[in-house]
Length: 217
Image (cartoon, rainbow, N blue to C red; front, side, top):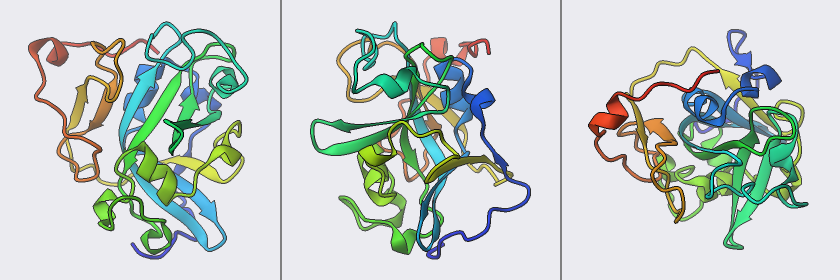
């Protein structure tokens, strides 16, 4: 849809602190198909999330592994707080804190299906609509997300997340996280298998992955 969304459907449910007050891997998986929207002057732009990654403070790949600093404080804040950081000094990345206040964990939003206000999104490396929000850097560029949104509670500022009744046409997939050199064995990347907006295809599931159990809420 080229035009922005000007009115939120009545049957959409906004995500609250309660939703995020659970372990990061569980929240990361359940954020799939939830709609992420960014408020701009013309309306709401965004679309359904199709790829996420989870990070915890015991996780060597996490920004919070060595404790709280001024730059990562949002990951230790109230669940549902936006943590926006710059990767390699180039791309902005969007995360939401999870668990409980004081515990440094959260979910990285890796990709979404650009669905509302695509004509108003800022294209990154690709002009294709399916690739507008393919990858955390492109997503933040398209939705005009930067450090100014860091520390805000989702739903109380320019970003909102919604559970919807949109049809899900893709199977769920899990796998190793992307672009890290530590804790590479964790299956904390979640996505919609074969979705055209994924930042990278998922490898076929191993027997161990197929037998995995969901984290306790």
